[in-house]
Image (cartoon, rainbow, N blue to C red; front, side, top):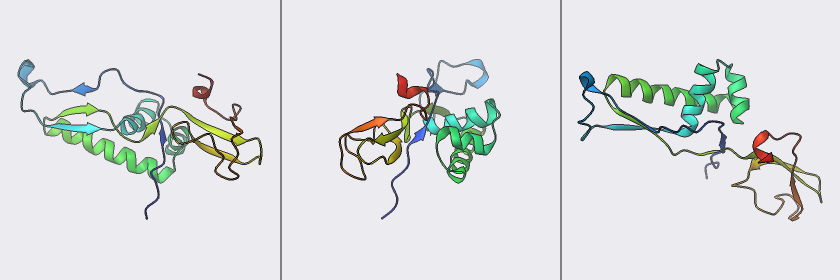
Length: 146
């Protein structure tokens, strides 16, 4: 059985989620245009690496994933964008396996820590079954405080 996909932490979700080629300045005819979907975490990987100019290690740490996973995500993102530009396809942005709410939870009963998302973390400790779970705000990124 394969491992479950780990949530990827993103800091930026774009307002505009559709970009289309405009052949010779005439954008009124967009029917029948092929599209490619860029996942939210793929856009985040490109933003961190190419816009913020962070190292691969820094990018992976910000997204709370491994360096290899980051490399796989950014490779796929760049392939999709380059293909869309060369082949005159539209780019839609959406979907993926991402969250803005990653936190380091701590169980008051047993003291174990769980680095997970609000989406995954139920009201029960995965180690001892206690319902006394708190967000360890000292290690959280600002999203925990919202």
